[in-house]
Length: 610
Image (cartoon, rainbow, N blue to C red; front, side):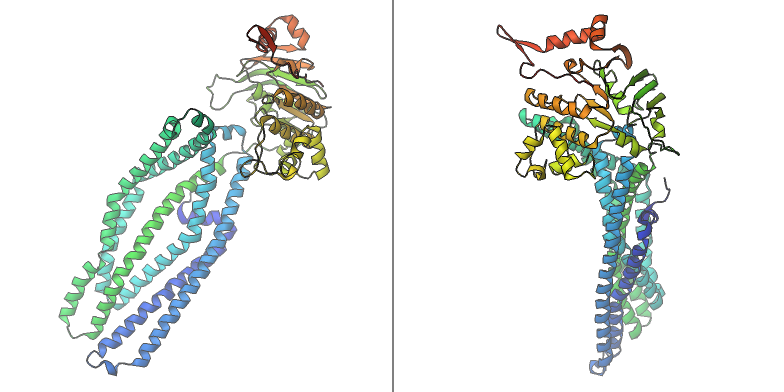
């Protein structure tokens, strides 16, 4: 992680776009010079009028007109260079904005899944959107302004010292304590602490807001308000409190700063009157004094803008540090000499694993060994929290095992390039995720280079072509906001179509029919049967009736494999699996009055088979 901060860090972030920023800075500096030309013209015109105050008609009219034209040209040139500088800054800012977001998104996409689980969606959203947006706003709008006001202030004070040292000192004197007040405020430990807590509370509030929106149906059903969603309400209150703390912290310092900066005339006028009293007839000094009285209040505006820009830069620094922390996170290690498997048996060899958030002795998996053979179905069953999903997530290296090895064929998955590993494994999760895009694109994401005919064939195999044809625009119908919403079963069949299109040799099914109704489940089972042909299939099953024909059933408890075998053999062993089977069969029966009804009466669950 870099130790640079402020403008230096922003220039480093800009990378190859620094040239545009330098051009923008030069144009903004030129603009500042041009914008001071009208003030210089006023000074020379004032000097001419004061020299001929007794007889104004004798004043050099041509000279005054010339200075008036020069003032107009300077003003026009200032506007043009300001516009050109702003355009260069905007082009640079939008390119930097694009580059930053792509860089962050690519980096996050290569991070271990464990890192993503430790960070809330709201915090990542805040970094990718608001923090990056602030960088863009600063570069596009505020950086040219900062250059402009700094050059204006330096040039104005330089001209003042050229005209009269004592009056210039009288102007500079209030600047020193004003800047000292701001430096003390910005460097105070409490400022940095509150600013960090302010950003932390903003991230937490964003995360809670997402949960609140997702939980809106429950909030509506029970007639609750935002206050009933305690976490969101508390995060909003915490965000408000830190905002108020920051405001209170800056209140007195800002008032003092503004009073001092707005009091230039109070310092200049006594000195000017004293010097003029020593030489009352000096027309030249009178014109200089008038110029100072006009220009002195004008310094306060750039100084105030500098103060606001520095405060903004401090805010941006906090956001940039958060981006840097993401970019400093280690990626999933890539092999130096990647290998590609030619056979697709999946074997776990004495694998143990614990999440980073767990205690040292809180292993999620302990000494797991098994082989899921190609062309067969291996089912994982067991109580909730037994480690079934963790095993499935270790196969594509969402995490790396702490001990032992996982192999595809005879190759350790750590020796396989991530892109090749992702192409080797396909997932159908219990909770389907569809993009806010067309149905066609949601299927095609499984293999972006697939032809339309292949996409349609995958939809046919997944038993979702009929309901897609009934959508308003068929395959071009948009899913989600601004489009249509599909049922849980329909969404799952779309994800199955995506997996069929991908056609990966290893398939992981995490209770893929969990949300399907009896009608949809029958069609889902037909789709899955087409998907599983000749593949290495690992199934996480809760409905035990679906894995009766699996070639291998692994029964898990507390992170260990406690039983393994086929359905009939496990029932004969009368262990955990047999108890689970009896409980499952009892759960599928329910009574209404005196009549017993089978919960799977309409379409009994079809077993997974290799």
